[in-house]
Length: 153
Image (cartoon, rainbow, N blue to C red; front, side, top):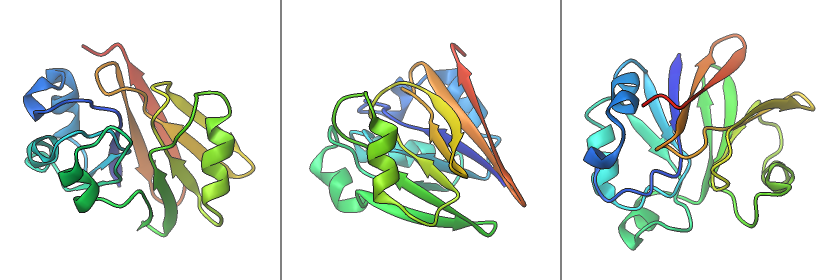
């Protein structure tokens, strides 16, 4: 399964996202948004490309906070993927998000705008960065691997 991972779109309309990002997301099985979506128009636009799962972030309008939880665990291809936006300053954000989940294979988060693709203690910590500048792809099967794409526009 190929998952497009984005976060921190900070857009009011899907048309404000980079065209190269949208083209890349046309080729995935699922889009996962790690929060700071801002409006549901972004989600409606993304849903024309692939199914969308996500969480709300601190900058989201009330309509997004009603539609999406602040955290969730996705079960995909037998793997458990924790999804949360994150909070606080960028220092030690990975420590804070790890405290939220146990028994997961991957933790996807955003908030810091800093891409991350690191394994620690058997858990892949994956932050796609800010969608205007970077995104991620997760390949989920018997194993999980991630790639970050930066400066793609």
